[in-house]
Length: 573
Image (cartoon, rainbow, N blue to C red):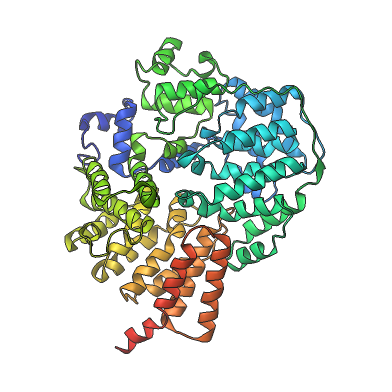
């Protein structure tokens, strides 16, 4: 309790945990940070009562629009969101019963409602993606083009966070035989895919980006689909194949009376806090809602004072407010709420390191940021604090290889005492948070032989497929194998190959590519034969094809060649 309430009042936290009182947003943010709890963990907890707006990705990938309609109907029956939003949802629901290739046109009044609702893409979430999936397949050239222009006008990390919107809207727009828009989409997507500093965001969806460009240019997807299937991403391959078949299957139509009501004064700055009155006030206005539309058990005057930054709503009331407006808590990942402290610093380091030559950054610049972060973690469990700080150093090392020599003191391995504290921290947990796994992925190669087997043995029982935690582990599972072969901890290799198998990860190819590389590296390490060399070469070629704009393939090639056959040497010695 003392560690969880570090910097807070222990009695206040105790009363909150026993449901005897609410806490402020500031206290909630600090509490989550102290717990190593991320925004996704909060969203997952809130989703257990099914009050969150349905995600809908599985239904989109599998072509099950009526199944998504059933989920949306069940959501509406709970009477959670504001009445005007519920009315719009009911108006759009029938379109989920139609085929996306049906030549159907939206009423002009609905088109205008959608143009206004989709005017601010910097905070698009599940609700907006539902609108893209349900009704934009039947939209006019003007509405689709307007949405595309607004989305691609975003810059920097804000654009990176909208990676799902880019491929969803791109594929939706390509359903129509709209040559000018297709040409624009191909040009924009090709340029966006190559933006330096955004590969951290785009790698997971790069095959979708490549498919959008290829479909827009009438190019064949066979090589891309074949590579995906070889890596075990069968669902994604099937989805993209269907998208290619459905493209340009219906005529384009025009809406000459559509108006752009975008108000620049309602735009939200990239560094704005999400769970903050003025931000939520802008989001309310973006959605065209009145104050009375969003009230819970608080007054209109309290809401007004909150939106003007003069007072705060409690943490629980703010959650209710967000549910009324269908704003998912996962949006905190893209904001600067205190719960996102580590992610914010991680992206800051990554951005600085990725543009290091252009901006002439020095060692002192990075050291200053690391010291600044250090002051935010004074009383956390030792292992957690060590991983926070080590994670930022790893990001620097990965994003700017060669910037500092490997012997630089900044890259020094944690002490034995610190490594032991990391193992003890994970051993103390009954469940992992996504923040824990993110930190583990960034620190795993800083653990040496002494603690490696113990750490892996403690972590693997927490691997529950198709959870957010599993997704984090799968997304970076090769890091575990890299450490095993680098430190020659051969006892770990069979544990890893048994634990990580190909899973149906829907739209993400990356976890299956990681599993393929983990399994291939294990084979190459244990035996260097013509067969293992061919498997390694094919894997590198597939990764290079599917992720051409960063050094992922080069990194894979390094591990698959440098350490091939080394396991035999270890066993012999």
